[in-house]
Structures are given as structure tokens and as C-alpha cells.
Amino acid sequence: MDRRLLYGRVRMGHSQEDAGTMMSTFAFREPESGVIEVAREADKRPEPSAPVAAVPRATRPRSMAQVVGNAPALIDLYDMVDRVAATTCTVLITGDSGTGKELVARAVHETSPRRDRPFVAVNCGAIPENLLESELFGHVRGAFTGAHATKLGRVAAAQGGTLFLDEVGELPLSLQVKLLRVLQSHEYSPVGETRTIKADVRIVAATNVDLEQAVQKGAFREDLYYRLNVIHVTVPSLGDRQGDIPDLVEHFLTQTCKKLGRERLEVSAAAHKLLLTYGWPGNVRELENSIERAVLLCPTETIEPRDLPARVCGVGGERRPGAELPTSGLDLRAAVEAFENDLIRQALTRTGWNKNQAAQLLGLNRTTLVEMLKRKRLSGRAA
Image 1 (cartoon, rainbow, N blue to C red):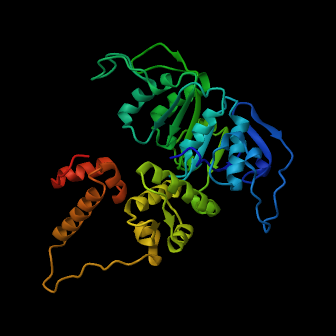
Image 2 (image 1 turned 45 degrees about the vertical axis):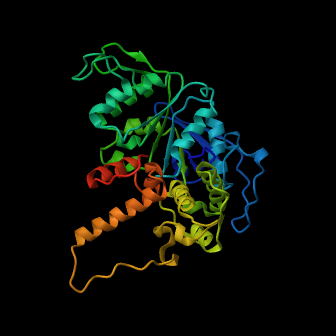
Image 3 (image 1 turned 90 degrees about the horizontal axis):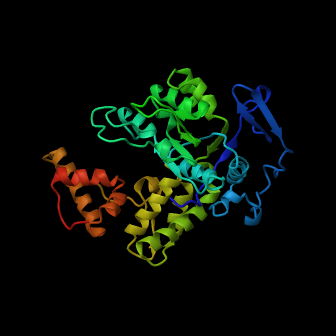
């Protein structure tokens, strides 16, 4: 996803009296030393009923110079990124899937003095638990079965730079202790190693899990939560920023047409209305994929509702005739299999058997499509 799609709203740790409120008092929380508050004059905001004027690019935060959109949430988020980027404090990014949490993390890194050092991302929920410790901290030769050589972990790879821990809420309790050690003592030990190694990394973490609830349930360490939650920013859903959708559609349309080598397409009024009124539960990622799908499917120079995913069209989309049940009945499994095979072949034929593009049309991961082709023994031109 393009780096211009970075947005969010700021939530800071407040004093107990102001808990849960949005204020212009920023609190930098250190568990051992209490709360040190750094106050600034309250921002002047327009009345709720007044239209929000566009913010000139020249006055926007430095970290959002190339951001698409002008929602107040974006301005607040990147103002905070500018303020904390030069520090070494930990940043916790929360928000729904598809809102661009990793891109916010990259903005923190690229606005910081560490910008010329590595940015290393780890998805804590995508790596098997038995491999995650070695992936993070590395291992020495012979540490376990299959450890034929010493391997550096992601912490070592990020030395001097930023370590981004995506889906940190999925981190097993056994590894949460080791991460806490990195945050507190700035040191760690690879698997099978007795000596300690100094870690000069800035930790930025992200999750779509409510960590406070996870702490209450005993699934996440309270001390680690407070260590991570020094600066807390929340990335809003696309449904909460519908005013940015037209600019995002324009951006994705231009980007996708260029990538696929198509002439500039237009969006019909009917399709545009659907894009504006749909709730976008998958957020910016879903919008981007929907536009790419439409550009791939569109047979003319104008994108129509028929080119958009059915879920976007809803009751407003064009209805295609459904299958009719024969009076004698049918084999449902065989019918579904034949229908599925036909759609897969259509997608592959339309994309010249490019499995990446065909998977996009079908709403699948490429690996899932490849496995389906093997299982169904469907073959054709090589991608």
C-alpha cells in the first residue's frame, strides 16, 4: 500500500481525573516514575457545525507530506508522529485490520534520527510459536534440532533502527517476558546462548486486540502493556473518515491503471455512490483491492457497479440471474465444484494465467489459489 495512506487519531495516557477524554495535555508515561505531563495550549477547533477547512500542505505535519486525505484525525496523528519521532519512547498503534498500522510505524521510523538504519517488521501472529523465539532473538548452532548454523534474529537485524512488532497481542506469554527484558534492560540472549547481547532498537508495536481486556484475562502481561503503552495512537476505520474516500479512490485508480498499463478510467455516478456509501469493514486495504479488481474487470473506459465486488454493491448492485434448481434435483457438491472451477478458469483466462491478478479477482491469497489449482488439477498457461 502507498505510504501516503497513513492516518489516525491520537490517544495519550491522561491523569486519572481526565481518563478517557481527548485533551491537549500530552502525558508521557513511565511506570516507575509516575506521569510527567507536558501541557500545551488547547488547539483551536472549528465548531462542530462548521465545515472543516482544508489544511494547506505547507502547514501540515512533516511526516504526512505525502498523505492522501485531510481528516482532522490525520492531522492529529502526524502531529504526534512529528513530536515523538526524535525520541526513543515506545509507540503502541491500535486500530482495525486494514487501516494501515504498519505504515504509521514506518512514518515514525522515517521521521526519526534512525531513518538511515533498518526498519524490521515482525508479524507475531504469523510465525508458529515454536519458531517465534528464534525468529526474534536468533539462536546458536546446536540450540535445538535442526539448528545447523547460528542465526541472527530480528532484534539483531534492527540494531540501531526500529523493530516493528505487528499483532503484538498474539505474542505468547513465555516470550512476553523476554520482550519486557529488551524494553527494560535493553538486552537479550539468543536461544541456546548464555551471554547477553545489548539491544539498541526502538520498539513500535501494533495490535487490533484490546490489550487492556487481554491483561484482565491473563493473556497479556500488565507490566509489558505499560511498557508498550507509552505513546498510544489509534488509527480510525475508513468508515469514520468517509470524506477522504473520493481522494483515495482517485489515488488508487491512478496508481492501479499505471501498474496494469491501462488508460485512465472514469468512475460512473452509480459506482461512485456505492463507493461512498459502503461501510468498508476491511478499511483502506479493502478499498484498494476493490479498485484494483474493478480496473482488472472493467471492459470499457468507465467503471460501473458490475465491476465492483458484490459486497460493495449490496442491494444497489446489479443482480445477476441465479442458478435454477432442476425439478429432478441435483448433486449440490458437484454443482458447487463446477461453478467454482468455472470462476477460477475465468479469472485465470482474463488475467492471462497470472496467478497474482487472478487471486485478486477471486478475493484469495495467491498461495490459496495455487493450492486449489493443485487439488482440482486445473492447468493452463504458466503464470
